[in-house]
Structures are given as structure tokens and as C-alpha cells.
Length: 156
Image (cartoon, rainbow, N blue to C red; front, side, top):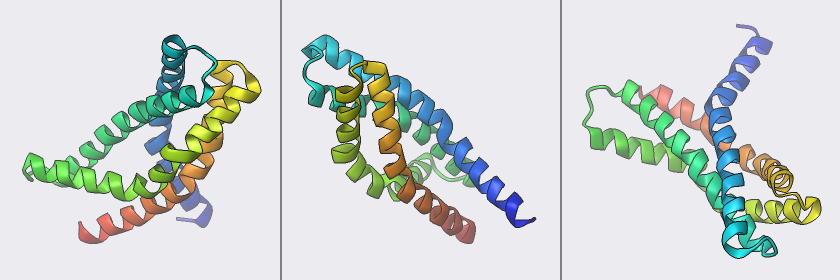
């Protein structure tokens, strides 16, 4: 396989892994922001940004965890369910843990706050803030995903 084809295949694997969760996470981020606006009013942009972050995390990780569990189960079809659940948890923490700690506590709410403050429009501000946060989130996440793939390949 040529270098260009190999790079395309790697990028395609990232898109297949993350895009569905990103789409669902975007929807749930907007729902979180709208819920915060409904409950607390639209003036509290900091609280609204955290609700958007929590909403996105629920949507994003619900699909990622299901996908990871399915992959683990396919690699270990005869393993006990708790073994596969444990491997799923470890895989998720390895791949997302470092980036997620910084992302959810500081960067994503900060970028969503800026987006909400600058654009005024809840949907536009949320999406722009989310995209800015995604850039900082995916640099370590994709690196760790590639490391995880190599580890799994060696032990399989």
C-alpha cells in the first residue's frame, strides 16, 4: 500500500470512529445549552457553557462506549461479559482520559463561553465553541488512539 493510500486509510478510520459521535455530541451540546437557558435564563453564559459541555459528553461518549464495547466483544467473543466491559473501560480511559480531563474542566466550557458571548446566537455560538475545543481535544486523542491500535494489534 502506498504512503498516500495508507494516510487516507488512517484518516478514514478516524472519521469512521469519531464522526457519528461528534454529530450526536453536537446535537446533545445544543440541547444542553437550550436546557440551561430554559432553567436559568440566557444571561448565565458560564453555566450555559458547562451545560453544553455536559450535553456533548453524554452524546459523544454514549456512542463511543457502545462502539468500543462492540469492537472489544468482536476481538474477544468467548470472554465473560465483565472482562469485555473492563477492557472497554480501560480502552476508553486510555484513549480519551488525558484529553478529556483538560477538555471538560476548562477548554470546552471556555470555548463555548467565548462562542456564546461573541455570536449571541445559542446554536452558532455553541457550534463554533465546540469546533475550537475539538481541535485541542483531538490532538492527544488521535495520538493515543493510534498507540492503542498498535498495542491491541500486538496482544491480539
